[in-house]
Length: 68
Image (tube, rainbow, N blue to C red; front, side):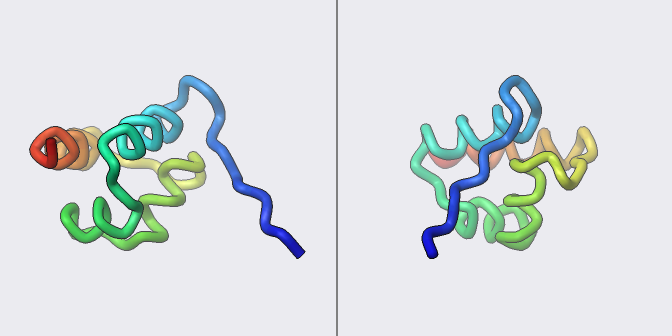
């Protein structure tokens, strides 16, 4: 049985985070490791089943920017 790829709702923080992460060529695992978070946590944020605090979101976005 083939797994269907779940995608976040358009325009949400999770969707924007996924788009930016993928554009920069980062995997969930790589981003999670550099942010000190689990692969699963990042995935849940992208799917909007988990909420990030503003400081944590800013930290993750800074890490993505620094990865360039």
